[in-house]
Amino acid sequence: MMSAAGSGPDDQGVDQSRRKFLTVATSATAAVGAVFAATPFVSSWKPSERARAAGAPVELDVSQLEPGQMVTLIWRKQPIYVVRRSAEEVKALPANDSRLKDPTSAESDQPPYAKNEMRSRRADVLVLIGTCTHLGCLPKPHFQPADVEIGPDWPGGFFCPCHGSKFDLAGRVLDGSPASVNLRIPPYSFKNDSTLVIGTDESTQGVA
Image 1 (cartoon, helix red, strand yellow):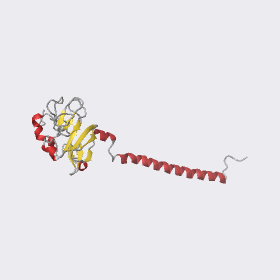
Image 2 (cartoon, one colour):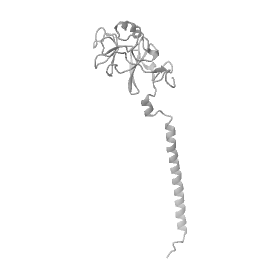
Image 3 (tube, helix red, strand yellow):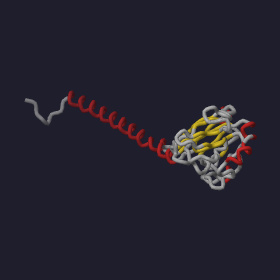
Image 4 (cartoon, helix red, strand yellow):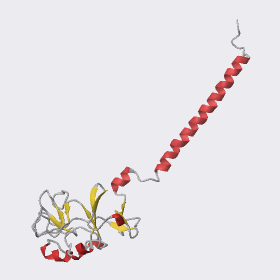
């Protein structure tokens, strides 16, 4: 009968194998732990979903838009309309003044740099929050004047299908509309000639 205290060559081989296994397992665990420890640090360099929902800036290359074209972006869970206006569309804006509820945007919501007849920083680029100022529906673009769906006196702009509010191509509300004020304008700026940044301007941190 073999003594329990005895230790033969086979036992030593088992101990060595076990020691090597434990060393490898410990090293692997340490490596995995290092990866998990580094992950929050790496992630911190990227905007989180919460940051985007809170209003992280949104960029758009406006040079890709043709005159008369509109795209819709999302910023702070709101639809943002970006329109590339033609020179003819901009030139026609003053003709609408006598038909507007708030032609000078005195009662409407926009940054100071958009409180002008064009309601924009640049004549060719219009940026609007795409919700009707009546009850929050989404106005539809009808840029062609005298649109057959709206009427021969239509100047071109936005028509809200919910209750019939009408806005020109500066987002200014026409007389007879249920909406009382112009479409709102978000803060925005231009990083360069072609890059529009929505959500960042002189009044915010990190001006583009």
